Amino acid sequence: MTPTRLHAVASSPRAVLQPEVGEVLVGADELQRRVSELGEEISRDYAGRSLLLVGVLKGAMFFLSDLMRFIEIPVEVDFMAVASYGSATDSSGVVRILKDLDVAIEGRDVLIVEDIVDSGLTLQYLMRNLGSRNPRSLAVCALLTKPERRKVDLPTRYVGFEIPDRFVVGYGLDYEERHRNLPFVAVLDR
Ligand code: 5GP
Image 1 (tube, rainbow, N blue to C red):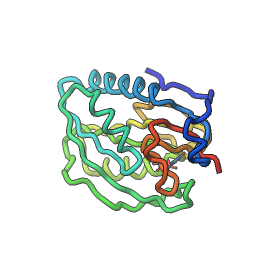
Image 2: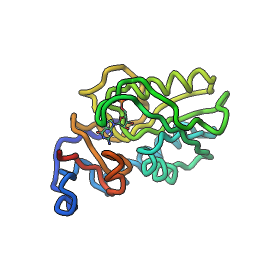
Image 3: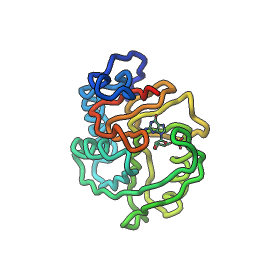
Image 4: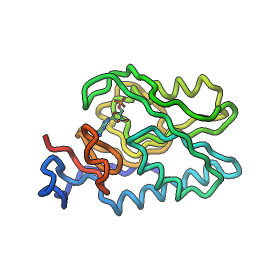
């Protein structure tokens, strides 16, 4: 199943209250529809196995909790928190682990659940780090990707939406810790 490619934008219903919140790129209904498709696809692909979801804090929290509800095979969840050195909008690829997994992943089927793949540097670090712990399989499920910004080639097995090169907030994604609570994904207007 190919990710939905987005170009069209609509105005945000909260733009008046929060001027930083610009056009809506992915509406709430569209998010739920695509997340349910991803859950079904993952359930089919891992049928007969059990899966460990690794949520990357904090951005993936809404996506992960919605996705889990659409997965029909046995599933466990753990979290990692990472900080990427760089500016508020550009990661450098130098990643620091703020919170590591609670469980060992050797021999497990592991699916990293990410909010957004931008340059791909954070994910590259996570893939190498978790890959060195000898999981049975390791794959990635990202809600959003920005193909134009990619610096490293990464196998991202599941992708929700391909978006243009814009900085987005909402549905878990923040700008300086704000706007995570928006039920849609919108462009940040600065
Ligand atoms: P990368 O290492 O792929 O360049 O960056 C990945 C991380 O940067 C994401 O997990 C996310 O935390 C942050 N990021 C990249 N693009 C965006 C964006 O458009 N909006 C927000 N809120 N965070 C982003």
